[in-house]
Amino acid sequence: MRSVNLRKKTQRIAFMLCVAAVSVQAAGCTIPMDISKPVEEAVSSVKENMKVKKQMDALDMPKEVESVSGGRYVYESLAEEDRKVYDQMLDAINSYEDEVTLSASNGQKLEDIFECIKADHGELFWVDSFRYTQYQRNGETQKLSFSPNYSMTKEQRDAMQRRIDGCVQTYLDGIEKDAGDYEKVCEIYRSLIEKVNYNVDAENNQNIISVFLDGETVCQGYASAMQYLMSLLGIPCVTVTGTAGGGPHAWNMVQLGGEWYYLDVTWGNSAYHDEEENDVKYVEYDYLNVTSEELLRTHSPHVKFTLPECTAVEYNYYVQTGKYFESFGEAEQEKIGGIFKEAYENGAHNISVKFSSNELCGQARQYFLSDYHIQDYCSGLESVYYNTDSGLNIFTVIFP
Image (cartoon, rainbow, N blue to C red; front, top):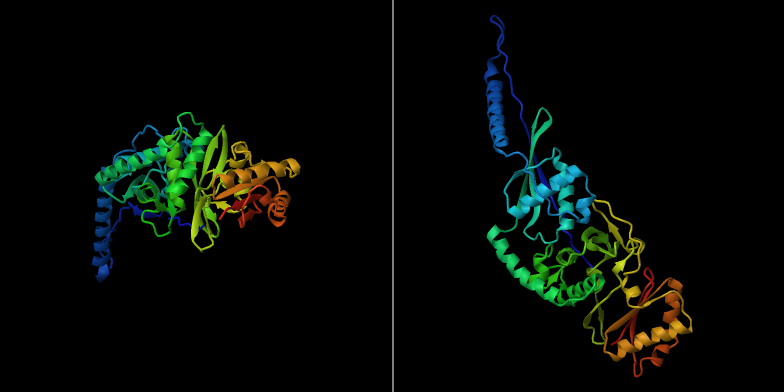
């Protein structure tokens, strides 16, 4: 799958507040004829510095902000002083401030913190970058201000949020009232894939507008929407960015039963060519709740925060649905054949099973396809498509 990820850029403007001094020589010394030029330059520099000083003095002191991000993974992973700056930046964005003073002295570090905010808060569709101004005197930072770059006015944002809220509710309404966290994750994953198409040319594809209002997006939109919906459901979730498939990519990390898992909505949005060469879309669950070992075979995270080692398998899709196998004897052949039969008779477009090794996956492909045993379970089946993922040991049968 192709993906586009807009990297957030910052601009640095540094002012040196220094005082230019002019020395007047004693009587009797020779005074150069062009002395007026450096004097004019010195006066101009002083005036400019005084202007900048007034701008700096006009800034308020850093605001004490009550955190709204307590418990969010990335926020909690930061040092205390960085959490304070994170809170101030997020408060400024939510409050639509033009410029605020931060409790920080290093402007270059703000890009890292901004990335952390976006990882924790997928809902921020009205801001995608920022500017900062670093006021210095004699090489020492006196004040540091933060100015978000908004893509719309506050009134436009509020109107857009109301429209998004209506669409979001349709996703939440599709979840059973007694559903557990795993069922909620699975339902949202499936719904995003079924309702939203992948389109690299989609407008607003770096935020959730493209997902909820336009129905087409790229990886960043999928990941932001997944994070936002999980936060509304009370399930810890993070957006992770990096590379995959040779290009920039975004996916998620979700916590279930106290353990972290990776999931990739974009890579679950799959299609195959039918006999008429039409693309037939289907939901693929290969990357729903996988381990670090499995994900890192194809994905390379590049984030400014520490990622946990994801080792749990309990809430992997194939384990939860009884489609994971650690051997391939007669009992497993019969059970897998029954799984294929049920999917075929129920009109499913595809069905997948997962194995603990690549060798077992190959044995299943040989038995059901090369040896034609799939016909023992799927009566009347004349042709079939298939796919094997040697990295994840997944065998997929696709019915025409």
